[in-house]
Image 1: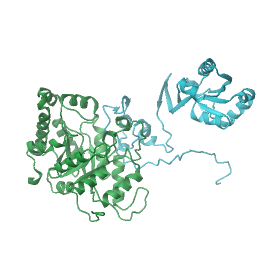
Image 2: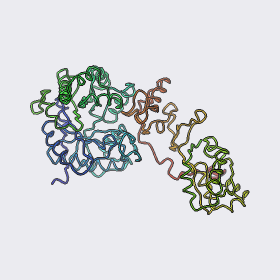
Image 3: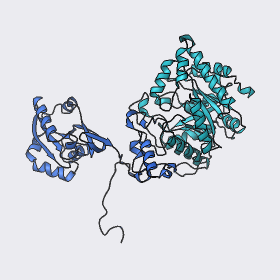
Image 4: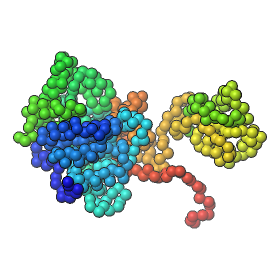
Length: 309
Length: 221
């Protein structure tokens, strides 16, 4: 077993994006508990079909098997992890220590997020940390890369990560979101995944604005699988920054019950195809949220095979 | 203004279990405004405790229960009623309760929950706008506090949970960062928003906070 991975190898995400290729990433949501068999199946299923897998960090403020442990597991299973780090549950000391550990175990790509708020999750009485937030987290990592922790102390052996961040194209109002996007780049973000996108026309407008701000930061379109009319109604009413337009909602409503999943697969495949064909962005991030087993079908329907790209 | 809410009466009764003689302390300032420890509430508490078979040896309301010397003086002034009591029920903020703690060796009980430092928006409407962080950032954010007005207290712009000017945690609550953005835009000072705000010193007021005036003539010319 590898205990220490010292050499700096560029993570797959960086390799692909810098080579000008279209990046395809997936997502692994760890379970609540130690029964990780299904998650391991998902990792096996995805590892050769996507360039890298995000591992969510207590997603939606729901306590789960840790992202860092899952990132290492993915590495051990021969996949490429993209470690999500949020600021909700750990202060700067804990985050820095985790990043040191992650680096020694070969994690080279991190996605920096502020994290959802505590009341939306399942530990509603917990104390939220937010000692730092996404922009400061990016800065903190850059400082560590320069050999110092946030206390200004010298590190004995540093880190180097390909640093990612999030942007929300559907945010209302959009202006503060775009300024924050710019700040994230200034703080060291090299690539972005977007919050779920459904309205491709709005996404195009967003991409124009984003490219005006920076032609260096890579941007990957975040796509969440649609599965039912109820899910669409729920998301439109309750998930900030997510908007499913009328025509997609109708497409799902018109589908017979047994064809809803295949309709969702078809919609996402179409979106992926559009991103590639119209060169809208630098990649896609597929969030199947519990339906990871259909990701191969989505990619097949989109005609995407990363080995042939 | 320190905002308090009343604990349920059943909880207060439980606190007082086994103690027959009670002395009640109310506050003429914040708790009076919050209607948790003013004259009316103290009188009502007295009546309810007596209905439960307790003896109320005395009940006083004065300004600044948090003033420890003042509280000691009030206790001396009410010596007989104070000495006759098994315990003290304090109907104001946690600072007031602990001020009473300094004045007696006997049991001291809180009748309120202390919730925040609040602004009075109108009668009975209080809102938290300052979290007493010890290192004021209002100058940088158009005099709207992100540490308090943003649920997450973050310093570099809105999170992904902002939704048409409202917060993901409560659709009734404004997104503090939208307020800050609008204010800075109005002032033509969006450059302040664009500036990256580094890690905040959360130990600027190390708990427990303490401030002591420097005596004149000490510490310099």
